[in-house]
Length: 180
Image 1: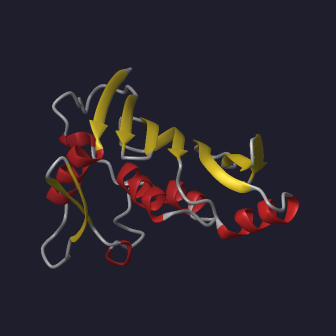
Image 2: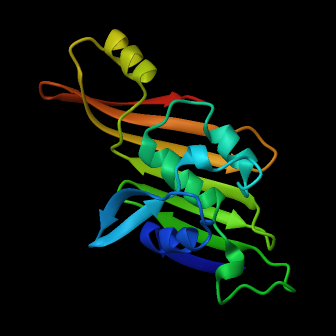
Image 3: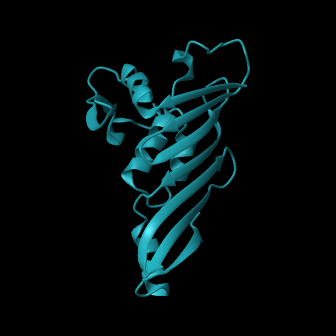
C-alpha cells in the first residue's frame, strides 16, 4: 500500500496538465499566492470523468461548491502521473486531498478507480433544507459550527452525517443528522 499526501494546489497543477486545448480553465481561488484552477463541470462530460459513479452518488444531495470542487479533484486524480506509480504492481494508493475546510482520504486501485473515501468538511454552509429543519425544531437557537462527514465505498450506498453545534444564550447543543 502506498500513501501520498497532496494539497489541492498540487492536484490542480496535475489536473491542469490534463486540460485539453479548447477547454477553458476557471480561476477559482488562490492558496499561498499560487492560483488554483479547476475545469468547469459543464465542460467535462461523463466519458472524461474517471470516477463517475463516485460523483453521481455524491451529487444526490445539496452540497456547497467547495465540496463539489474537491470531490471533482478526487474523481479526476491521475495516479499515472506520479513518480511512485508502477503500472505492473497491483497495489492500492492512499491519497489525502486537502482544501481550506475539507479533507478527503481516498483509496485508489492500481487503475485509478476510487475504492473508498472518507471525507471531513468543517464549518461550511449547511443545506437549506437542513437549516430549515433545525430552525423549526429549535426555534431561537443559532448555528455555531457544522461538520459534514461522508463515507463512500464502491458498490455500496453513500453514508453522510452532519454534526451541528447550536447555541441559545449560554446553552449549546450538538445535534446530528443522517442525510444520505
